Image (cartoon, rainbow, N blue to C red):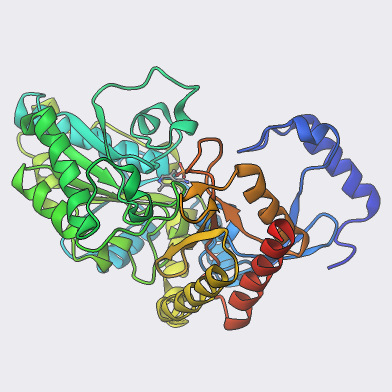
Length: 463
Ligand code: PMP
């Protein structure tokens, strides 16, 4: 891919970027003396930067998004045709791709029937929060308004979703937050010894019981919903411990609490089932999804709920509480559902769920090997092609590895041409997990290349 740009173009583009772009997730001081990376082209699992350097992308576009890989002409062509036919109409009107995608995805979500379109994971979660609040007003005189969220989970970047944010380092600067959101403890077994009273057996059941304790403290008649990630993503790649979700469902039913599952990362194949919650046999009332829905070929997010919830909003039309007074301007873009339809067809036709399970198992095996070879690897965990390796300064005390050292591993892999991720910055215990979420098309060679790069990096950084 040498010569994608001539030298002149590259320097002009980098100059324009440095003069005008405020990059996401970036502290800009380093750009005074270095250039930002600009990606130019992608094919399958590989992506090329402005210097023509090839990278194997083990994080699906940085934030777990490009599930079917780069350069899918089939999606691009379908989007092109639809945009020429009709790009957009918002408000109360429907669209042909909108109806078709809703029907297709809902077939994969037994018990759920209604889909609401919007354009980011944060927005999808906000829609669910608004419906939950409206249900509290409709059914419980406004009393059952509290929404529980979990330590370490993340639900978005808006003030509303940050109010339900369990990663303190992302929240610290942005208060005050919206009232009515209440935190429950995390369920990371590796860190259980830091939780008062955690048992050595049946941790999953105990961790779920801690949610019940919060409900009882708050008063069950004030708690409307519980919002959880099926496998926590940015908070440390945390699959639930055994028995956790079964107990969570029981607790929700016992106290008449709606279950909102945030599938923004796990949804549409990432963990080897269509949705993460489907590993655990639970029945949610709300599911939100975004990243993998169209693999980043168009901006689309969805909030899906039950007919029971839908019915609550259509009784007597003269009552304003029976009308969900909400819109999403770009929920009217037809590119999203068209791209999502093709994305879904690719996953089915190429058997990518099977591949995700097989390659996910290989990735976990390789990570276990790394744990044997490097004592800084304290824990490895994952589900499907969504895995993490937590680095520690000391295996016995489990003291988290300093963020700067973890970042050195990521940088070493980058220098080798393999892009991996790490959990979010700045608080000890959050920022020490290497993340792997390659596209669902990954081959054995790709998986081995990724873990070989990490092996080399760990050796160089830690000796
Ligand atoms: N929920 C989860 C679990 C996420 O990881 C994210 C994004 N990282 C969001 C919600 C928010 O999605 P968006 O950035 O599209 O608003």
